[in-house]
Image (cartoon, rainbow over all chains, first blue to last red; front, side, top):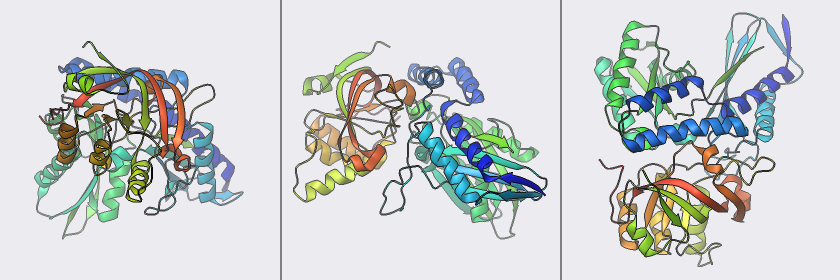
Length: 280
Length: 176
């Protein structure tokens, strides 16, 4: 049994909250540079140039790329041969969020009651997803998620016979409904199969992939490519102001499901595609 | 695209000249106000109380800034999604608000009110918070301090870049 002190987890969460919010994803910046070549609309070009310049300034001035530094979503893959010592795990994660959002001058965007509201003042609590896996390590993933794009999330329980076309129609309808709201260029995360909550979680987890890495399954990889193509033909464009670059990637995670259904979840991410990993 | 220089407070003749698609650089005072601040303003109005800011000729920036790091007037401060303020916006225009800065499309009711009251809606680039913060020279909370990032903050901006997304005639870049 390997012992890991909760303090190490706090430190990892703290550092990841700060880094992911300040340093723009390199793959996203590459995609922006490509988009500059393919865009013909002057407004679209201007928006992409502004975003590239923003990423440079954020890094240089040590400021978050976006003021919506998100609700902290923390994934913990805990090896079954690990014994966590020195305190309780959930408090340790929240302490990391508290320190990261304070020390990084990140925005505190969490309210303590969904209806009565009231800012908690330190961006806690985090949304924590834990999984017990083989091995003796702990993998900490932090993915701060802004709510401009989180609000543009959809789940639909499709009929089992609707096939790839049913999925496509639902996703395109969702992206069109979202339009310029989620800060395009977007990354479209999808979960197909499982149950209601499993589909939603898979959609979120698909947003942890390196940008544009395709599904390992041939049919879903094809669906990702086709959807990306069709989404970019909608004309929504950067910031919804028109253009060819509406999405940078479509990611699909899948899981077996029940004979009576085919759950599909869509979780849109803005161009601030933020996630970071530490293995302890 | 040559940008048009816009100074605040806005006048009818200035607003009238701005057309959807124009690039602008805004200089002067603007006020941040987002969800919770709008709700409080409306609650105040329904109780017949005086508002903490005079809206006549002013611009509301739908934004909640990140905290100011040492030596800077403000942290990252990009726009938030505007549709969430749609149900409140017509009332603010009725009270004299002349401009809104945000991101994303607006409802028909908002566009109708913009035409009626001669109001312009600017889109700033969502997610460009660090770049936009450089245009803010001074920041001062003027109301609802307890709301944290959602307080109403008076920003003194210099050449703040935006695009006219919907003009006062109702021409709308989001409707293509």
